[in-house]
Image (cartoon, rainbow, N blue to C red; front, side, top):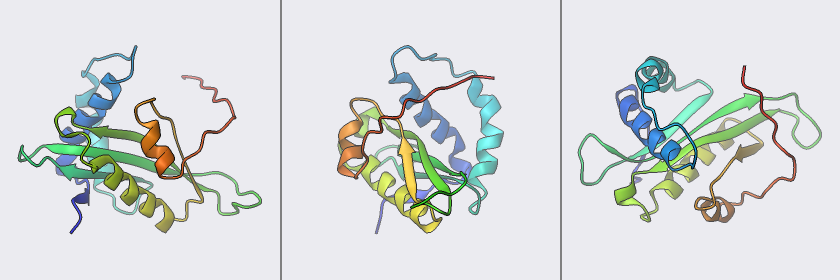
Length: 156
């Protein structure tokens, strides 16, 4: 039996806590958690929609009932198809976090493998993510490869 399960609306606060663990690990990011209260209703609604374009997979914390040990979350976007990828569905992984006290137990890998299965089932022909130096070995072991294309971003 797998330790990984799909996150439910009741997990929303813990999902945000683990997302903050990930955010806090990135140098130079804002450590504020004021945004959690505003984000919680939307996250609960997304977690309640099993047929939507968002999925989060988690592992329950083995020593702290009600807490989560690991989180992986992603979305599926539609992009106009092209040769080799006519359906246009693209997966994007945007949150991978493991509680610091239970790292190196394979939880993130198990969650990632489950999310990748979800992407496959939904017809995503490719999956993208950005990674830290620490996370790169996990993703390369799962088959991810660097892309030479530069990413540009505009905040509106």
